[in-house]
Image (cartoon, rainbow, N blue to C red; front, side, top):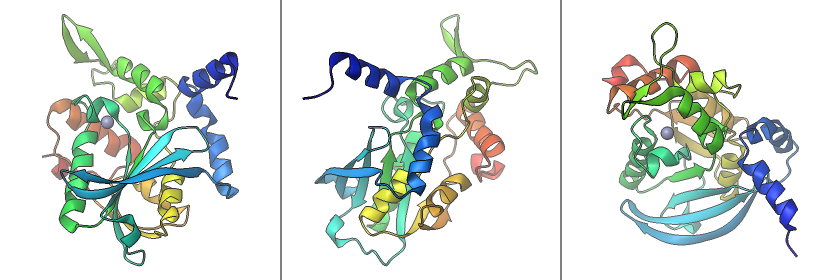
Length: 253
Ligand SMILES: [Zn+2]
């Protein structure tokens, strides 16, 4: 049956549009009304460099995106009563797939998987919400406000006072929220497996609150990445200054 060509095109264009994030207010209302917001679509054992995981794929009923979950070991043997080690990670394709050097996302994801592998227990939830939740189209706009080509080299754009434009400055200037992610889907994915108590690897107090508001008992566990270059260092400084992440200057040395 499917959608007609025109309806399909309109749906896709809405999903891809950089204003899709402005509709996220609706999804937050939906969360509070206890309507299902995710659907489990499939799962499989998955051998990885970090050990054997159960890989679970979910569909997000609020926006049509896929989210995935990596559970260390056999998911049917999860110890639900224990406080589980958890990373809730938002997708960053530029860093994770293409090894962009301006942010620490890839290193942070690897560090989380290493810690889980060492503990032989834990979960990574990978949420498809790029660009601080504003989407991948908005991300290209923000990045192009922060970086430019000059004589064949990429340089950081400067503000009037001579300081660098951070990606978060760029989101603000373009009219996007600096933090527009929702952790409702992550909480629902945990509940799907009966998990209510976690030790969350994050420096972001909003992520802790974002899970707590959906009934997850969260204990934060810092995860600090040493910056590989000055751009990454300034990105982490901007996260501390503009978004309130608990990153101290000693964490950046
Ligand atoms: Zn990133």
